[in-house]
Amino acid sequence: MQKVIDTQTTDDPNVFGEIIREYAFTEEYGCYSCFELLDEFKPVPDGYDIQGRLQMAMGIHQTQDEEDLCYSPNDLRRSASYFSNGKIHIGWYWDGDGTLAIIEGNRCAVNTDCKKAHEWQWYDC
Image 1 (cartoon, rainbow, N blue to C red):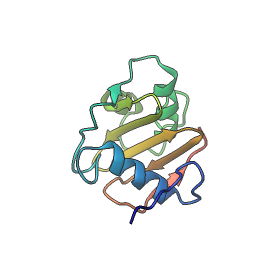
Image 2 (image 1 turned 90 degrees about the vertical axis):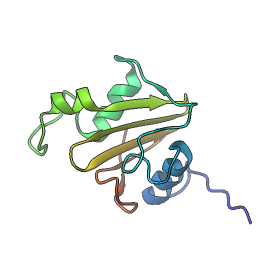
Image 3 (image 1 turned 30 degrees about the vertical axis):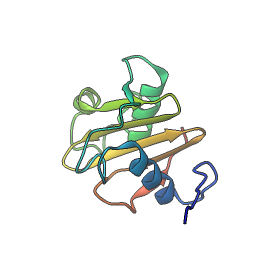
C-alpha cells in the first residue's frame, strides 16, 4: 500500500518535519544520528536569502534576541549547516541538542531537539 501525504496541506508539523527528514537524509533520524543528506542537496552559499530564512527559523539570525541561547549566536551561525535542493531547504546546528529547520514551499517547521520526532513546531518564515 502506498500513502501520499501533501506536505503543503498537513496541519501537523510533526508529520511535515518527519516526512521530509526521512526523505532528505541518507539514514534514519537525520541531524541526530546522521548529518548526511541525499546528493541532490547542495550547500547554500553565504549571503543567500534562504540562509537568513533558515537562521531566523532556528533563532540564530543576527537580528534576533540572544537571551535564550546557551551558546553565542555568532558561534551557532558559524557552525550551522545550510543545504537546499532548490525546493527543500534544510538547516541545522548542534549545541548538545540539535536544532533542525526545514522550509518547503510556503511551510516551515523547526525541531529544537531533533533526537525527538514529536518536537516540530510551525514557524512563519
